[in-house]
Image (tube, rainbow, N blue to C red; front, side):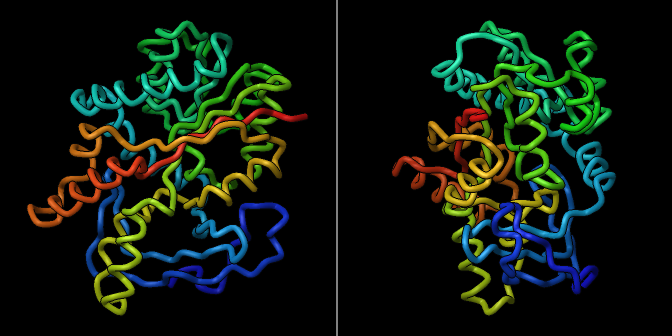
Length: 309
């Protein structure tokens, strides 16, 4: 496979001397598409032996940018109004969670896409700013927000644009798993936040039933059934976190975790994004979804962390 001799380092700074183990390394004849429409035929996933965090060799930053330009504008933007309406519901719920810890102030939404989260922040009384690597997304967001509140680029570009100690909070809604270098990005976000500023993130968890079932399907078929693994390990995701691994990463980049809660997708979002695999598979996915909701879990987790220094 391409890059087979390269071994990525753990995203957690203190664990970079640990040799990761190779979990998956295969190619398929036909591409499998993520829920955002990104195809993959190649899966090469490593795991940190201490934190349990999984990760892949990141493509060049410009390749990641292209993936977001090609898929996320349609998935999150006005090009899919029904999906945008579903996103609005889940984002409003997340803003209410943030309000438990912060009532107002300047908030930077990293990976703002077309501005859906920014709109919910405005409705809740915050002063929102946004940055995104996708030029298409930023152009769409400018139809609703002043260009002075938007930055086309990554977190380093946002730091150059807005300066140090600029924000009361930073939000990362399904973004941290996309970073080219998660630790470096968090270091930059640390400088963007005011002292005791809030970092609010949401990300999928490896302990979700969907990851567990995908891993089990691969093992039980001795690697013959690959599609579930290809689907859940999105090609555009670089990192796949455990809660403990995510805590370690945040603590080592200057944050203190003060709140953790499950963050399952609302049924409407899940149905439109994931139930596109045929009747039998769709029924199985729906069953897993409702069972995980009934037990208080779900596919994702949300965390509140404070800048500690």
